[in-house]
Amino acid sequence: MAAPPQEGTLAAKPIALPSNGKSGRDAFFEKVDGLLVADGAPRACVVIHDAPPGRPAETSIVPVDLAKGKAAAAVRWPSSLRPVDVDRKGEAILGRADVTFAQGLPRPALGVWRLADGGLEVVRVWNPSPRGETHGGTPGFAAFVDDDHVVCVTGVGDLALQIGQVDR
Image (cartoon, rainbow, N blue to C red):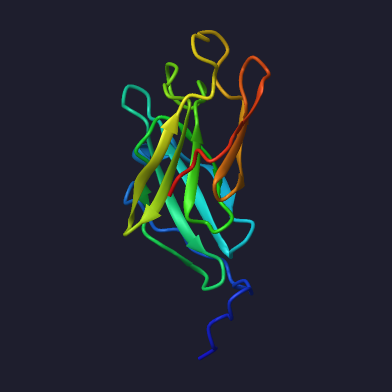
């Protein structure tokens, strides 16, 4: 038996994602919506979005250890915000409002969740738009700058660096 990969190296074989138990028509509308890769650790999160007509959309996150070559069980994403980035350690996930992902305009428009004990815990949710702004305040882009900071561009084109806003 081969030794497990050392920290910092990546698994050489494909990594199977866990089955959701769906098949046929029930599985037709499920798709991989994103792959969020940590910059500073061999970790990633696969975003799976299932949006069958006439039923509420469901999103799940599959944490993947790229060094060990293993995917953990899928965890339910608890928000209508679209998962768009993972922090450098692969421990926190950033979500932002996206009208193509969920119907309506979710408020607040940004949120961070931490992977913990086989689930997700909310760290903080907020609206980056100036007070009183009602049009175009949905971020078109958002990403982690480091473990404690998020940068976003709102629909009105303003760059907003959220300094010290992601408290853990």
